[in-house]
Image 1 (cartoon, rainbow, N blue to C red):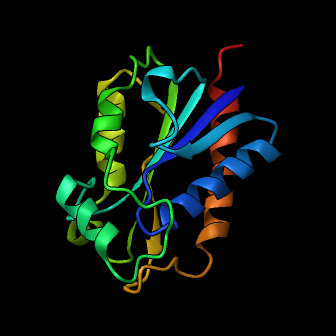
Image 2 (image 1 turned 120 degrees about the vertical axis):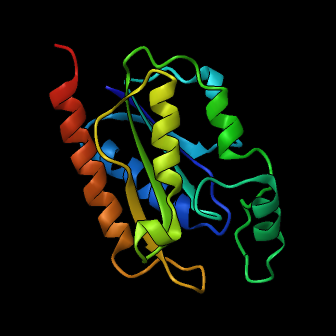
Image 3 (image 1 turned 180 degrees about the vertical axis):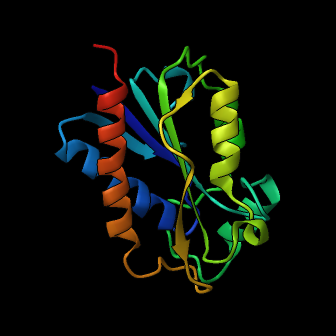
Length: 174
């Protein structure tokens, strides 16, 4: 089974989570291509499972202004940070899912979702609108106010990757 794990990352946290998910899928036998949305063309995605993640900005997926603010933040030391392209534009370029499997994740503060919002919820909705079939509810991974992953979140991502592989294997056509 082939999977793509793609993400937008502005402080590096979403990238670390995406890489942990990809590694977990690989360990469990999937052929995985992974990386930032700036390096993976949405139009070229040919996979059984597509996993998409982004940071939560202003209660949802990033916008041009929120990306620019993150890139210019003096605390931001992530070399992969870029104000373009954004996750919204990337998702708009996805080919029709035709029922292919998908999952969505985000990074956000550890507060109630109604208070922080969730990029994963928006990603999941757009994936479904494009014809992808979600195999898991949107998942959140938590960051601190200092823009660092909370303890245990990489392990959480590894476990979620294992769960996705289990769900994908159970859902795959035989």
